[in-house]
Length: 251
Ligand code: 6PG
Image (cartoon, rainbow, N blue to C red; front, side, top):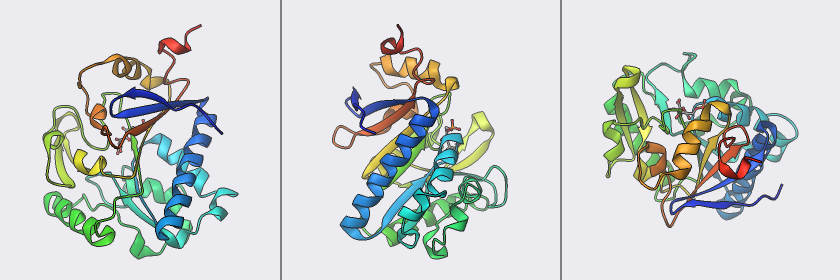
């Protein structure tokens, strides 16, 4: 599938592959392209996953024939970009979602699956996860970072108005999220923006108002707008439902 990638602003580009199904297919192709490049370059694929409904559908496709046979799963290293403060068996867990979507059954070595342990002492565990990232990746960047956008403009667990938005030194922090009355563990913007490929999946009708607003904003009002840099642009992958209010799609 060859589609035109267009500039969104100085830190991001976007592509609209079509319907939900066409867009999911594009997401999988995009990820597989990055996978092949990483394997050729350094023999491993370091990917960080997010929670949300779109990643779930993507993980299901990746772990189903014919795609699953294309992947050398023992070369895949899984990380997470954010996690809720729940245990690994909780229905709210991003780790559980990914595992249940099929990743548990692919034979990825256990020592290459790095869940965020956000259910205990979340501050200490965030520090430990940052150390783990440095040990595992050495000075290498993540090959691929999957993100979503919440309807309030959050991404990962970087919610509007929260302290983690302004973090400049840490890679991973515990972030208090008053709007959800909870704590979350999350990558910070400096670490998000250091990944080799940064992808934002934005699908579905519920996103269309925020997409319309963000696509016409000059200034930064929402966390998701801080994803990507001039030198390392993020790619927004959107479906027609999420972009229904953009001018180019109106007859
Ligand atoms: C989480 C996420 C979060 C998510 C967005 C979009 O743990 O909730 O990582 O940032 O990606 O809220 O979610 P959807 O894909 O379900 O819209």
